Length: 385
Image (cartoon, rainbow, N blue to C red; front, side, top):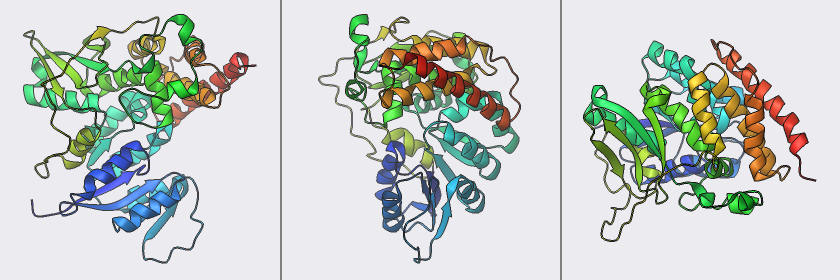
């Protein structure tokens, strides 16, 4: 290819965004970063803007403390982020914004751009059918950035969707895979943030410890690949070397294996066949490799089981699951509730009816706010004295 692919990166200072910037650093002759955003980390945002000579910059959670006179176009706040998405022409947008805040930017990207590299799983979990309908309406190509969904996407394209019977997501099991119920009741924040194989932000690390993150990925897989709840499974795989499987109708099982490094799925999504990618991750050494797989324990990880039930019910249930979990995780990180109270709060929220039809972004946010409010009230009941 003789041109430089134009890339916009939303959430460039988080774990996914940082890995994307580092990966693109050695590929400057083939990629041009035309816009970046961060929420509040203005120092790192400006560093990237200057290092990569990015002409469009957005701080979505505030404003810059110093006057900007270097010729760049600066955007501010959530409305400024949407303006930047609308105004800047590019070939692919990476949405690496964390949590439900990434929903509205995703829908703005879908209506203004042709290719979306999506790391914000909440956009699909909360968007559901509205997300898939919008993708079809605007003819947007969506590349999933989660390592599991990136793997499944590649395998399905390689072997043909009509031949695929089911998909199997792998989960490391987090740091508490072997804990007893007594140990689970005394988990500290420090323990929960110490993930054995991945280095991620605080919220997603806690979600990985409870397996809520895998629950979100189950819902995401259903909408991305058109699979019903009976065609999706999860297995615990502590080594995080196999990044999911597809099971064929003829009985064969296919997988993708590589070291636990997000650079590969990120660059696969941003690249989209633009150039031949080389040496993105270290070659896997098979000489001393032991792989283990086991079923997940529904009692040990109730949030993953809840996610399957939410997927089966659809409508507002996945949105309520996400909203209640976000609130409960934040309360845990603030030391207001215990680790096991996260799942207890989400379970109580889901006992209410969430059967409303979702036809707009406003409907999504309405359900999400109601789930947040219910969860916050429960936080007070479960508060640690």
